[in-house]
Image (tube, rainbow, N blue to C red; front, side):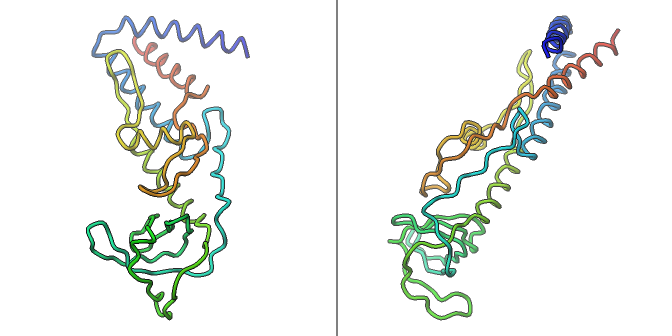
Length: 227
């Protein structure tokens, strides 16, 4: 293992000296290609949901307060503007003064304040449900679908480029905030205004030995093409 590390160190020194001697335009082109290859490698690893060391990402811990569902709910909800809309929730939990779950009308996870529910509606083809009590179903399936969609979107929002003599791969804007939460395993709200959740650490960016060797191979091929 030590011999392999020493060999890579020699290659890195040779490649670094070579890049320093390139003209600015050629160095920029080479770094752009390098950044693109790194981004592709990171995207493939995120799709596979594994860390740079090859270990699988930890699964999200289920919430202990969630219980099995008994029925869907529909209700008229007063928005901040005073207008009302129908909410149709098929998997949800009660958390204090809020209801959080998958809303079919919005096609996503939403959180509703109990105080803004104007009145409950019968389910499609059903009788008036009456008042809602208790805590309902663990929305595991909805959370899993949302999580997969989120990481898919993060992959597409990964940016690659060059800055002077450096190649970079990064997330920007809102994607950067979401990536930071998952990369370091921080707390965040499932939806704006909703309850906080502890997210496990899932490293989104990081070099593997395969990445290191692929980068060196690409640079050595470039060197051979000029010699």
